[in-house]
Image (cartoon, rainbow, N blue to C red; front, side, top):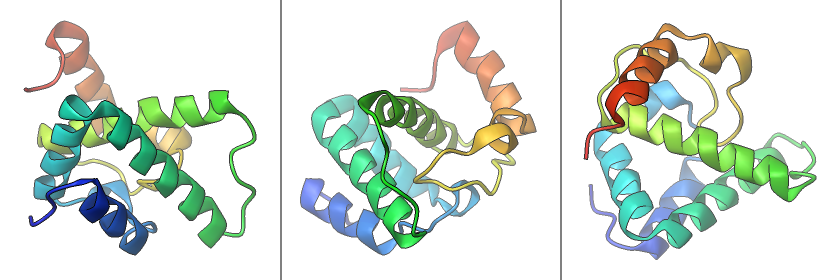
Length: 123
C-alpha cells in the first residue's frame, strides 16, 4: 500500500467513502492502524472526513453533535483494529458510518470483543 501521509490517506478516504468493512484490505487497515497509533489527531481528522463524506454521498444530514462524531471515532477505531488483527468474517456494514446492530451483533465483533477485553489488539 502506497499511503505515506495524511494527504494520501485523505485522498484514499475520498475515493473509498462508500466502502464496507468487509471490503477493507488488511494492508490499508495496517496503514490506518499505524496512523491511529502514531498520529492520532490525523487519524481522527480523516475518520471525521469519511463520516461527513459518507453522509453527504447518501444525502443524509451531517452528524448533529460532537458526541455523535466521537461515538463514530470509537466504532471506526474498533473496525480498523479488527481488520488489522485479521478477525475473520467482518460484516458488510459501512466503513465510514455506524454499523448498528448488524455490526455489534456480528460473530466477528463478538469474538473480537472477547479478544480485546482480555488483552487488547495486536500491536
